Length: 247
Ligand SMILES: [Zn+2]
Ligand SMILES: [Zn+2]
Image 1 (tube, helix red, strand yellow):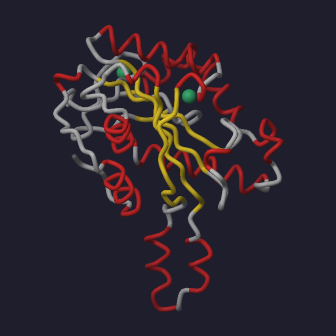
Image 2 (image 1 turned 90 degrees about the horizontal axis):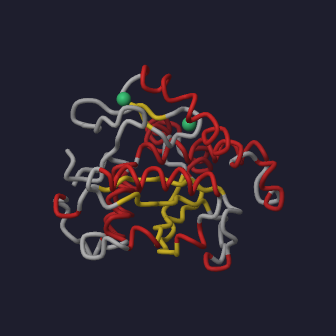
């Protein structure tokens, strides 16, 4: 499984093999992952600080300038839904980042660019109420996890996008670990929830709800993914279909 973007247990370094068993994500930050409950427990002492920092960053109080856009309940619900969405689509996001930054041709891009995927809140929740009675439960099932709709993607300079020292230190740790095993480093994909009608280029970094997704990438020669110029439409379709992504 190491030919693809892969996930390592943050405690013991075991490589995830999704065909056998999925790793468990830290329920706090939804960023670190573990092969077992034992590894998760063992890692907590060293993980606690970055974990609590990540969670605290997502609290409404640190986004007071944006509180007008979201009622607090709505904000917290969106943050939770975004974490779930991120964990559902981890494999797809890694693949999209790999394609967007053209890591097969230019591995050095991993060090100075991030893929930002802009999402809007899906309007499916309003849709439920207007659905006719006999098919409403079915529609509800299908739309239950479709909280977000794809909006656009951007490739932005890493240095301008990520400035939080604790998060940068965590990324540096992942990059080092990847390179120590011959990998390319740590790819950064960011999922960002933008308000309807916002001018994407005028958004203020970090002011929106976002989720940073680090993906450690193995040596490029070993990666079987072909370059795909149409990665953005593949990404959009996969996100919109809600099906599990397989390459
Ligand atoms: Zn482990
Ligand atoms: Zn955590």
